[in-house]
Image (cartoon, rainbow, N blue to C red; front, side):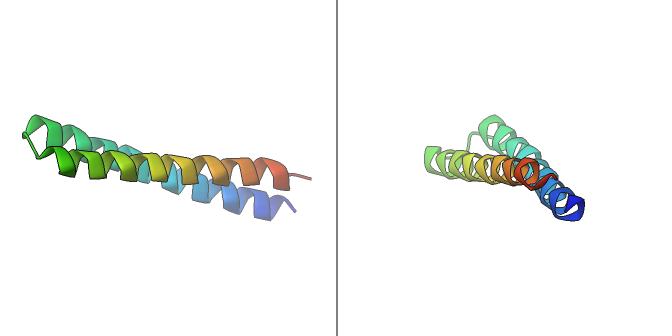
Length: 65
């Protein structure tokens, strides 16, 4: 049972890493004066990744014996 919990937690951490990387992308877009539509698309992607990460962590907590 612990294995499933750990796997879900690792997936959550991978998604959180993606979240951090996309946040860096957003910072670069803002710094370089990217179009508002591009920035908005990146923000939406960040929010989606963050939500996925949270879901994996919740699932991990639920799978604990």
